[in-house]
Amino acid sequence: MRRSSRITRGAWPVADQTASTRDWTTIGLGALTAAIGLFCFAIGLGLVPVATARHGGDNAPGWIGFLIGLVFLAGGLAVILRGLARADDSSGELPATAPRWVAIIYWLLGLLIAAGLAATGTWVAIGSGTRHFVMWGPLGGPVGETVGRTAFGIGAIISWLIVAAMARATAKKIFSKN
View (tube, rainbow, N blue to C red):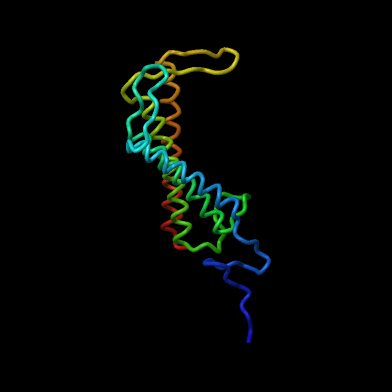
């Protein structure tokens, strides 16, 4: 009787018996990041009180806290998936032995992270309320609201272009025949 060279460790098949165990440090850091996301969720939902803004301005709306929490939670979950799948750091992809549904969740988490960051930057650029910006470096100091909002606006446009490219690439991966 011939034994298959493909074995199963845990829930996912591994190519050979020399494969390392799950990366518990990576999984732990992912869990910590996800917990930070849940804390931001709680802030966004008003379950955790926060200090008022230092400059006397308005605090961000609750949905921004929720959105930032979502970004951290998605990032933490993506890192946990990498640890569970025994992914190495040589590429941003999961190993080929990971189930397709896990890879799809991983790709969608990456897209969610990028969209959440782009939406946050967009809110800084065009959202209501006063903004206070400080520039660091040799010419550092406070800069005007218009300069800060313009910089965030340019960053938001670039971010949304990246999200669009990621969405296209993710759709190709999900709907490909492979």
